[in-house]
Length: 206
Ligand SMILES: [Zn+2]
Image (cartoon, rainbow, N blue to C red; front, side):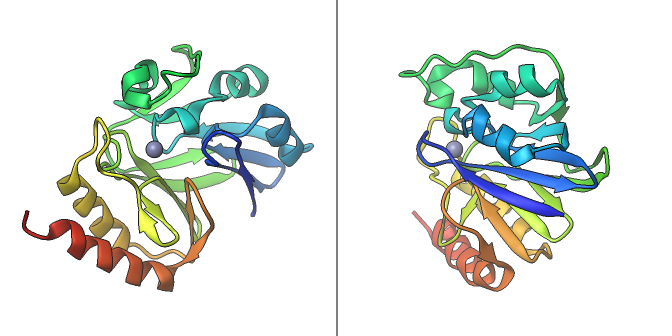
């Protein structure tokens, strides 16, 4: 399995292209279509996984959908976030979407798309539609966890308590590399430290 990271020009969000056995999965949709097409190469895109509905992760989604014609996996609440410029912070950008070809998640799930067998974990806190994906040893955390830090919890739909539960859930999982919605990758060992700091920080009495 090969993973390519593309840094977008929309708040430097990350889009990932995962390739295995001639098939490709895309995680998030902030990077320009041309860059994604280049990374995909001759492989066939079988699915798009969204980590949440904020505009910097969905900006090019409609273009991807039209080009690749594949299912888009998203949390059930994500469509509401994606359609509301107030909730997805895209007021200054005109983001188009359509209602077709979504697979809606409501709970932790096992998913199979083409050769990819993986798990989706509900990780709300930064956003109620936060979903993280564990594909083999690689964990795609969206804006829930960063290399050194976690996602903001002061946004319109954020929730500190939900974030604590999500961080605890991630701390209990086994993975080798964590890929975040922004910034660089981190290791399981780095995240054990990072997660424990933020679980304590967010759990403090206010
Ligand atoms: Zn976000």
